[in-house]
Image 1: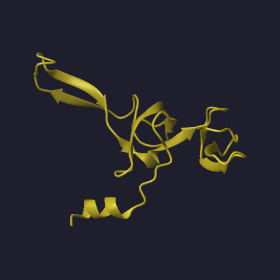
Image 2 (image 1 turned 180 degrees about the horizontal axis):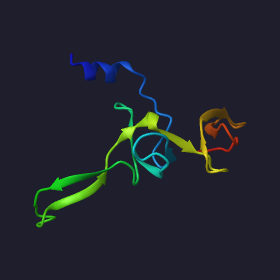
Image 3 (image 1 turned 60 degrees about the horizontal axis):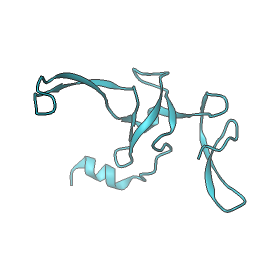
Length: 117
């Protein structure tokens, strides 16, 4: 079995961010940028963040784009490089979980106690 496949299957594939969460990049070339999570890839531990980690893709001419050319698009970044934005203060925060009176489990910002879901 290839090493990468072994690594992907052996880890807990739960991410601390979900689609449509607002996050800040905490390390790397885009450090400090804020964006919305477009997609989450739990098996690879990566997320796609709007306007972050832009790469240039060389597009061959096709029916939709007969000209072809170079397009810029987002590439996934590792989930450890992003942190949630506190809805109250706008700074980075960790996430906790809390069970409400009606029995529903929700995500909570550790800094302010604000409910994220």
